[in-house]
Length: 378
Image (cartoon, rainbow, N blue to C red; front, side, top):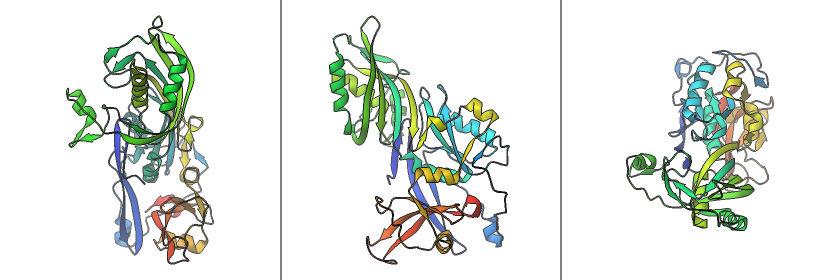
């Protein structure tokens, strides 16, 4: 798992922490760049020896219309409106959910719309894993103009007539930007340069030269090419599937540079984050009247490979003890696996460790994240 992930305007430094309380392993995730309030742990019950987990009525598959104090841990898939920052969305949902334990899994620029995955209460601990998933975007790239931010919000720095650029030229340049490529991030990004955010240096009038980094653009598909401004400009509508850390603004810039006319992003809509798509998303207006929370069990089943535990394994895992390794085809050591009790409740996340191919205990599975009964993380 990457320890540092940059995306859009934000940087996420992801850490998994572990402590022992009462003989049981307690783990939680922290992310300095993910806007989340989940870094404190209520230890009153542990200190007194009393259990802080109370019996609750079984919750429905989707919680709708819940009021403050009734919201359980889960994910909200938001269709972010244009003009809102990701932090603005988190602030609105804190009010709607009646809790400050709300965070998002990867910044979406204010000009962009679409899928923003938001965690509520203990589900904020899953955001570390969601940040690194692949993304899908619908975008419009304008050829013939360059901007300081590589998108439409920045000042135009250069204009070149793109009338001579053919459709074939565009398709060839797009092909060169598909696959495993080296990409220089947009200078207006949250990447730190000598301890200062890159965008802050640019806004202060400084010059920033960021090193290229490997990213994967698994699909860069052109849907339409139009002539604008009397043929001086070309607008290109595209779909992009890419790895985490890919800047769509940088793709627009690099496409224009390859064609010799400059380019920038004029529209961006994120349609998928990992397994979560616009089909599952709700607008803020819809959420204000009907707060839809995807419960933690279903969120984890969509996000991770699944292991069904025996009752004994579920008990051992919940107490931080090692269990036999997961035998799931196609997973590597270190791949997080969602572990479920016989009741269907998420117990936690685990990963294989030890000597590959050996018998237990030389090879074993160890908890990354543990949830207590009722899906309350501990």
